[in-house]
Image (tube, rainbow, N blue to C red; front, side):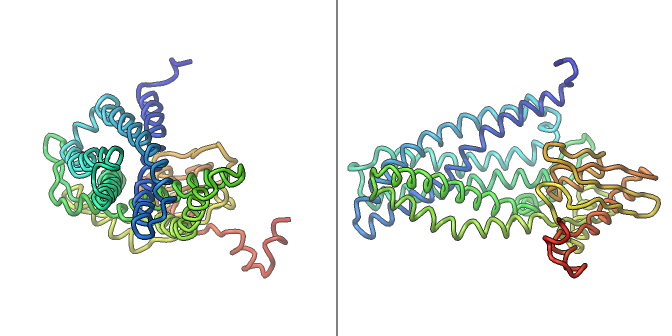
Length: 366
């Protein structure tokens, strides 16, 4: 059976497993560090020892998850070279410094003051201990900043040039760091981390209340978690929606990076929202552009994206997880891309279709 898997697919499976395991820990510790800072601030402000007791419990969990995140992250960074050696060689001049900045500005900061958080009780003053907690929380956000910048650059690259030897060299670090998709991805990740912490802490607090044990501490956990969720959950929806807009643009230039920049700017001017229904499209649609035609059909959960290169790139960016596609006519990538975009523009949600027909959503779905 393994004989049917080529090295590229096996590398993707291995890297996906490592990444899926690793992201669990930073997604929790980013929000947890900020919550610990809030707990200690409330303790210093009110003098209520319940906040300190909750802090002491959760800082131990933070230490374990932080350590697991570091260990799994080291494995992931090694796999950049072992699994994607050509990519690492070509893009190393851009991605290498970004990942290095994360270590220098964030990891060292977190690792240094984590010891004060864990072992500084009764050894340093309360305000200094609080400062250490805030610095660690700031370090987790800085770490997310650099990692998301590198990840976003791989999706929307700019600020670089391609040398004659095929290697990529940065020409504008500001454009590299603050690439077009970075603000949305960074905000989306941070709000997701805060939401994760809110639900985990709230769930444990609710469990304690249900059992009738540690009720004072449980009320603090559940109350603060729900307050965070009330504000963060809507923000997550808004940011995710902004990141789910799609546009297509054509950029022409002598250099590839400049062509990418022009195409990106053109695409920004024609962004539109793609309606989805449980990870797939709401109905079948045919898009046409020139001699190219692209047929999109809804698919059941777990089908995946059944599409060629040009079509796949568009539908995956739109957030479609399950869809069946077929290219009819020319295979010219330019025509295929614009035909796919035309098809996505024709999609209508159930609510929009019902409104156009002058009926309720229940009437057209029964």
